[in-house]
Amino acid sequence: MQHVNGLTYDFLFDMAKKLADAGAMMLITAGAKGNEPLVMSNGGTPYRAFLEGRVQGDSYALILRLTNLELKEIPAK
Image (cartoon, rainbow, N blue to C red):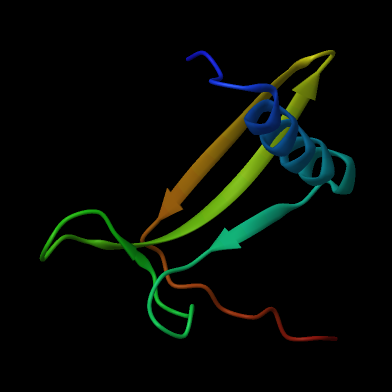
């Protein structure tokens, strides 16, 4: 894929770098309140989505990971 302009590249590169530097993934949600899973088609399976960023030199990758598993909080000990 080729970027249309430098602004798009800068925005997406910065997002990937922030995620990579933090060693974190960002939860991507849908719905009016932003608390619903993603559904790719009408009547389709709902997925929880996580965005991961990777950077190497001037190159970057944003990876969207999908899961239909239920997420549960790990109890503190």
